[in-house]
Image (cartoon, rainbow, N blue to C red; front, side, top):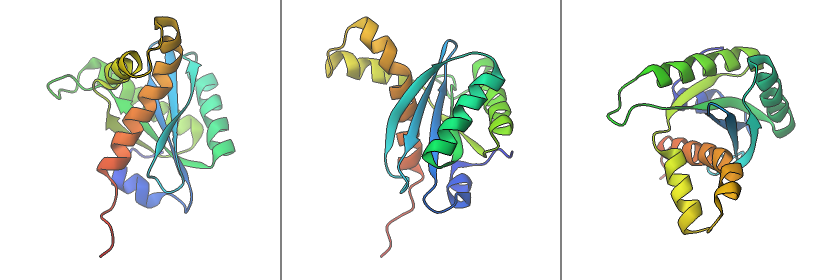
Length: 158
């Protein structure tokens, strides 16, 4: 499957198809889901990171169940915007998952998404460390996907 820029991915989606946002962590993979209008991202769930085939099968099941037509994988660029080893690993993993799942993929800058979500969960939700650990991956995926949706939303019609 091709690696697309996000505006291209949005344009290629079938009507009423959703996007799955993916935050590929070392131990857990956070999943988020857009609405069919591609305006709102919501945390979906987290899955343990394991073998690519098993993770791809779980993501494919979510796509089938929820009507998703594309993937947006978080790209951990350096704080200065540089493309380092972590970004290359995320790109390679995203491309492999895209092939295995059979859906097109786009990459989106996810710098500081986990730390922003952690800060919000501490300050606003007042969650304990254990409860935050369970919620942060899917919430970070939603934060990243929402950022992507907002940045690529078409302008309103006049």
